[in-house]
Length: 168
Image (cartoon, rainbow, N blue to C red; front, side):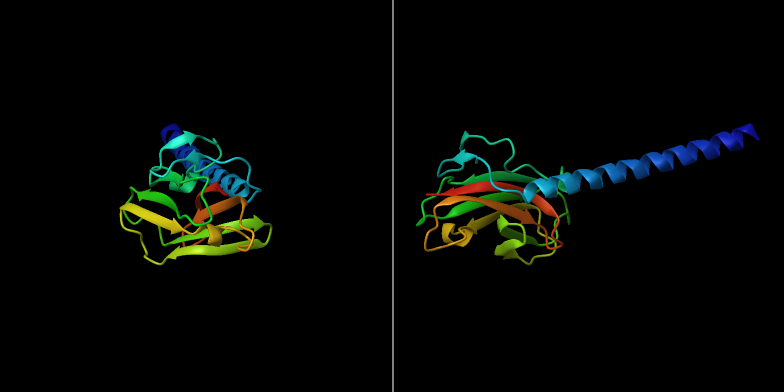
């Protein structure tokens, strides 16, 4: 009888541990997404080839849901001239781990604009390069200079990564 009770308690404890781990990851993802949809602050400076000149520790991190499944190279070049083009390289390392791709420019609460979309579901493993025009990133193309938050999500709008881009 004690053995059965021990097994039940052990099973209950194990189940509780799994549930708490799942809740913690969900909570971590919510915190990450809250940070993604905040005002831009600083940016990771890169050159034309993508080499990092100076790093902002808040830019281009991978969300908890996508840890080990996706890697990202920061936007380059950053800052970018209005006549240039920005690239963000996303490397999918997991099989069937990312369902589509959307890139948003975030201008403030309730003010988002889709600036890129890849409808492949799932994205194939390997490199997906995201080309962006600085005029699409800018809130006002007639006066595009400024610092802008860019948020990359899957097609279900789960944030994968985010970072800030400066248009000169």
